[in-house]
Length: 224
Image (tube, rainbow, N blue to C red; front, side, top):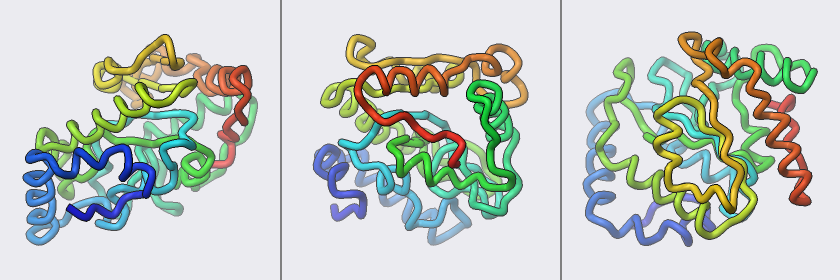
């Protein structure tokens, strides 16, 4: 199957495209785009991979579903297109960065493309969703694919920071080797749980300290 995804990821995940689950997933997703409104736009499905080649990944942030509202989902977890009102979780992420690093985050800009280009893989577990129907594309095969991506990074790379926010991300990160990578856990940044430990977790400074210790450029988080 000819999947349009960044070259290095295609090399590392090529076996997945030949598996039966992926054939069924591709058929399901294609049918959904034909029949109903689906987010993100087709060209943005693999955007997280396209901006962040396999060998350039420094940090991984795991999300669950793309946003299911108009103009929101853009292929990067927690991100929205510039000019779109920032969702509450992203607002809280920005608050924690400001408190942690003493910087000012950009007003009204939530694309997060700068993070991705610096080596932050903003990966949702499920890469598509039906409009106004959260979780509608879960358990269709995407989870197998994104598990394979995480496992490949864990096994074939070293010194990556994995930010796991909330139980879902933490369970998905069970395949990560803690002896080779830094695993940072915190509650989800949503308004329901941010005050239970996301605020004050200081993961952004911890991530940069780890990267510097391993001879890598820190992330300029304020350049979202």
